[in-house]
Length: 504
Ligand code: NFE
Ligand code: MG
Image 1 (cartoon, rainbow, N blue to C red):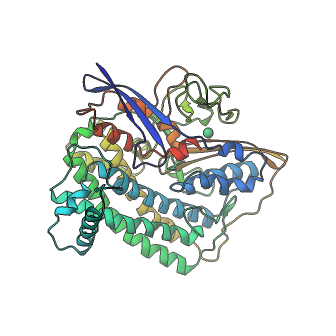
Image 2: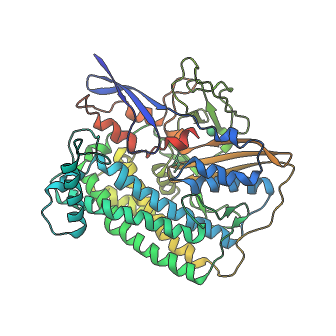
Image 3: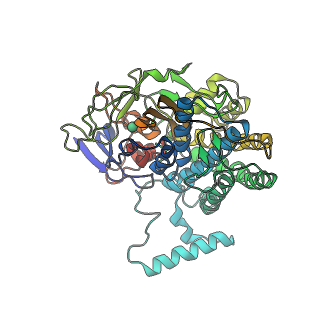
């Protein structure tokens, strides 16, 4: 008998996502990702000054605003025919790098690890660590004062097998607390060049308005030192400990098997060389990216705009009562194909491209240490491992970008807004490939479209009826207890969905 389960909302992700699954003989046979709100940023932007775009689009999200600002200024720079000077390019890498670090840390410790680590086990803690004792006392006080203990942020949660009672569980709880401090530190570090966080004030077409000083370089370096220590000594070991304890999750949630990255973190002022390269991976083979092959279908989305168009022609016309539609996300496709985006996609492109010895070393290390086959990384647990490896690679590279900054040298380039122009801004947000497409008409924004990482990953069925990447990853997942579909939420959260972004 087919049992229908609605997980609505999925908690501990960004924004509102409902996942409806159909379970047959203990396995997911059908899956539907439902983004349950409409935001309308693409419409809000029309008719405005193009310089509003990098500020307004940052409000799409509080977790990845830097990337939206970045995609917007890149689209404008193409339209204006300018590129930033070296200091501007490097400061952008340092701001985005800090944003990756905070995003990846919060995703692992505060959103996803809670599926594997038992935070409530702190009530039985008998050790002497001051942080953990304070946390234990807080939890016990909650328990004494509340009729609904245990409450948020640890519950509601599904019952099942957790790490509880192990040393790894206690260490992960300690680092859950430390991770909150580290996340704040990454924001402070970014703000040295960003002006403020989460919504960056200094990002403009042509560069960054903050100046480079020796004091800022020293302050960034000191904070980066602490963050790199946390990544090396806590984040990577904790991910490996969770991975070793839940090896089944290297077999589950494999998904569509095709990957796309635009590439990000410019290594040259002409923008040709990127620290994280772009590319497309199909059946384990890497090929070059052609952004002209990106389209968005809307057959199952609440829009009545034409289906199957690229973002320069695509429109956003909401139709909340559309028959047959089940989500506010469109369905982006590349050459008609379903694509996964995100840290795993980027790491696969980087690995297959072969130029980054450190990336290869880390992938090989994880595969060896956990006794895996390389293809096992395409999985629920592989996404967590890829995110942690990427966090290390980016944090280490920040040191290099910091050392190249030149105090007092220019950070911005002059420009004029043309009467008519077009621009495409492609970058890599923490959650994957992010693109903004801009058309300027009469010096104003005539047309604006965003195709966003979670729109790719949590997309619905396309016009051909092919399920999206997360929907495909869910299919085949065993569900031991229909009342507690823990396996399904573990698969979904490995993609680090952000529905606020996805529906934009
Ligand atoms: Ni709201 Fe975002 C990232 C973007 S994901 S978090 O990373 O763009 O869709
Ligand atoms: Mg869009």
